[in-house]
Each structure stands twice: as C-alpha cells, then as structure tokens.
Image (cartoon, rainbow, N blue to C red; front, side, top):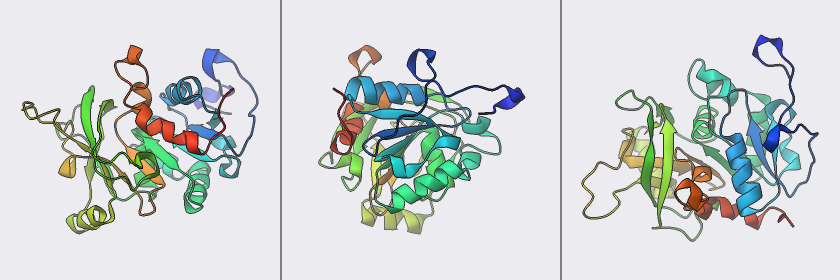
Length: 256
C-alpha cells in the first residue's frame, strides 16, 4: 500500500508482524484507514479478551462479503483533512460496509468510526466540534437507552463507564429528526450522571440531548463516541466495554 511520502508498507498486526489476510465468513473485520490509531486496540479486545476470530484489514483490501461483521475504529482517518471522517466516508471500503449493512450484518463505528458512519449516511446526524472547542480525554458515564441495536440487546437501562478521546464529538440533528429517532428507539447511548449525588455535567462535548451513540432504523449499524475497546480489562481501568464487544460472539468463530 502507498502512504504519504511514497513509502511502501504492509498492514501489521500485534508485534509488528506482517502477514497475508486469512479470510473467513465467520470473522470480524477491523478496517485500518490511513491515520487510524485505535485499530490494534480493537483487535486486541476482540481477539485476546473476547476471544473471537477477527482480522485487521487495510481499507483497500477490504471485502465485506468475507466477514460476518465489521468495526470502524477510532483515530484520525486521512488526518481529519476537510473534516473528521469525510474522506474515508467516500472510500471503496465504506461502499463495502454499506453493502454489509444492507444485508443486516452488524457494523459498529467507534469515535472516528462514528464520524465516518454519519458522513457516509449510514447513520443520521452529524458530529460537530466540541462545544468548548477543546479535545476531551476522560472517563464518562453512559446509560443504554435502547436495546434496538445489535450491540445492546437485553441491556436497556444498563450503566457503563467508558473513556472518550475526541475533538469533534458533539452530536447534532434537526429537532424533528431527533423526535423521530427517539420514537424509533435509535438513541442508543446517552451521557448520564453517575448517581443522584453527582452534580457534574455528564455531557463532555455539548451533544444534543446528551447523545453519545445512535443506531440506524434496522439496529444493525451503531456508532458511539466512547471507546469500549479501552474498557475491556481491569488493567485499563474497567471492563464495561465487554458488554458491547461480546455481542460479536453470537456471529463469529470462537478462538480455540
């Protein structure tokens, strides 16, 4: 693959090893775009913690027909040029993701992946610059407000502690569309106070209606700004992210 400066390199997995892709329709794909930087975190969470078969795939090599589900990870795809997620949204890889979504396969976009999903039209709304125009990096409390999505079945009302790290995470949509989404159960995650004694504003970026994540009408495409892959082990500070990532167990091969 060609990267800026004309250097040639191959996609790498953990430990810096390069290897050809191994395909299986029972695998989960994690797509790497130029500028992705949370891709290996997701691979580690799925492969080593959840223990399912997943594969890191360079965006130019991605074929959605070969996978049971896909993750668009966080980072700064294409350096956030123009605006976050917009260039990746027009890539051939996202065309493949759209086909997967139309077939009902689960798709999750995390942080920059969420931005890509909104820019591509796979999810409604937009992610704007944070209210105070600052980069926010902290742990936040979330409430699952809908179990319509593939990733939140049976989890409505659950609270999660997950980290955020973004500069453009302020969710916005027109009021009439917001009401429609609420009726459809598409508001999946909201920033929420940690308890009745917590007087701190739970919303880290000024998102409309405290929205942290949404889904499409069918429930198989989900985007959220917080990072579940960074909350999958006690060593990282929490394991609440496993509630979401373990849903992939239903469709992927288990690692032996």
